[in-house]
Length: 132
Image (cartoon, rainbow, N blue to C red):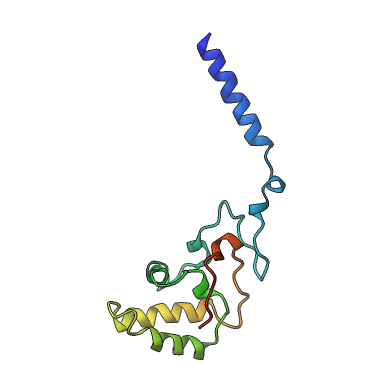
């Protein structure tokens, strides 16, 4: 008898979950400012960063001082990325010059003024972004 009751509870719970839709979850709508992102419940900050040389260093280093996602908003020119790289040299003292070059080459390639700004759900930008 106990197994039957548990089975009904499990089936009932799954039915409730299946009945939920994207429309029922207002948090699932991304902020529209370019390319379409995954719904917020599947979104991760790292998902904004395409694969390529320097990606892992950017993802693991840049969020230590500021929001990782704010760093890629604004679609900067190559010259602006170069300026930011110079200003970050002292902030990233533990990063070799070679690795710093790879990181900023990656940022210049994927987050430049010729590409659409990544779409980031609002809840991931609650800290606010300081332009630099």
